[in-house]
Image 1 (cartoon, rainbow, N blue to C red):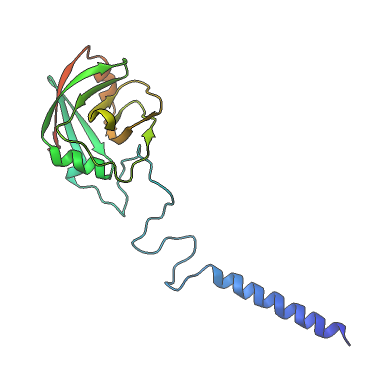
Image 2: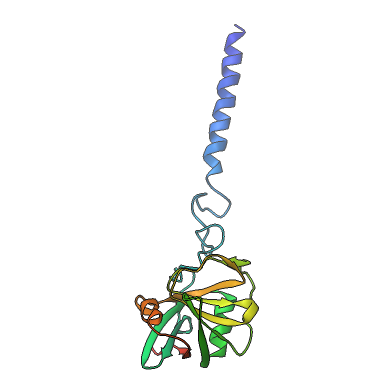
Length: 182
């Protein structure tokens, strides 16, 4: 019967396709397609600059926590894992004279520029972000809403109430930034 070989042929093709799909979920390292191989990040695309939370792939160490002292008040910040943040840490301790800018941020020049390797052209910082404005070589403490602007780099995040406390500081301030003692 001519229909039997066609059915067997169709069955063989379907079985071959199913076996091919079953094997497609694995690679030669033995990992599942949905999981990242050992030592690789499980996320795709760029990391969120607003999330300085360490992962198992990037353990937090003391150099990624900093203290910011303005007058008698001390704030803590957690830096993201970026070339710019590492460059900031390399300059510590540093004292920065900061002025109020637009009622949303305190800005002050750093002694040396920070690396922009791996950074986007700009950012839309959130209230409580610690940033760097590359064109002015300025460290920035965001306490208000700033829209996206070219040249902004998010370095990390101030701890919980820091933005509110900084917003209450009128005019210019002097900030001392140093590696965290915690």
